Image (cartoon, rainbow, N blue to C red; front, side, top):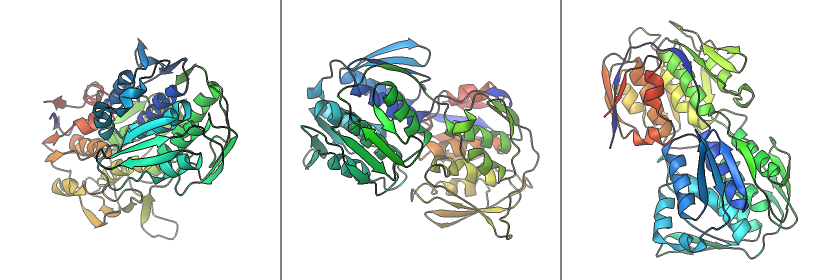
Length: 434
């Protein structure tokens, strides 16, 4: 198990480039199974979750070609369906949350899929009902095999239908869309997730010959086609990284330029940081965060305490609430952080309290942060990263703290952030991997 040693108190200065969007790439790679022709994907981040999925695709018989820096070709013209029944495949799926999105493409193109309960962050209940119910409505049958703890899914033919999703699940919507593009007839998905990741998947599928309309809305209409062909796809910059870098700059009182952020796909993220009092300047497609000695949390117009909560797109992504919570510890004022979607994601705040933060954990979903206004800084600590987003939040806290901090289990951070210490050290951080 690797660890970071962080020497806190160093200001950052310079430019940093966000990596390709992790959550988009996981969908896109699974989508390449829908055609026998090659699909080229550019701006693929070199992170554990993505690399594990790429290796899983290789093991399934997909021809994977490294075409350049962060560029891969995927050709699924000879998929080994017998491998899906192997214990090795099942074991790999249990450690990779993104593997659930193999179901849609496999059932659409091959009429069968086998999947174990996938792994990922331990941030509370993450049910799969939306995936399964949607694909069942298209005509698939699910059989749970108790002794192997796997789901066997079969469908001789998928048929389009109308469905109203019980929740606007991003991965659930992606899975159903990938199944529906090759189904017979028209599929209508209401209450579909409309995050940029899903938009990008739909645009790639349309470039491959699919007929999807309503992209960027919560009502998708998919006219099934008989087959798809190859294409070239460019992955968006990771908006979670963009938000993380904004938080780092604010906490370390640094001037940082975040390059090529794809402003139109950031949604409410910049405004959420502005509500904490953080100044942001837009210059072309870059965001400049100027050095600030102090930043003050806004209040609502009636004078009540500011509340920042996650919500389905175009609301604030839950993946950034951990970062926003940490940034609020050094602001002037108080804020209520309401994490609605995952009941265990706020449990890392005890580590921040040990570092000197003033936080009241009201319940598994809500925490009140009372900002220090830099009257005293956080102190270095010894902590363990419980998940990707809490890991980067703890790293931000350590970079701003007095003294030296140790963060263990940084494999969790590696799952979502490419060479994070190398990129941050290049602009002034002091992070050592041991």
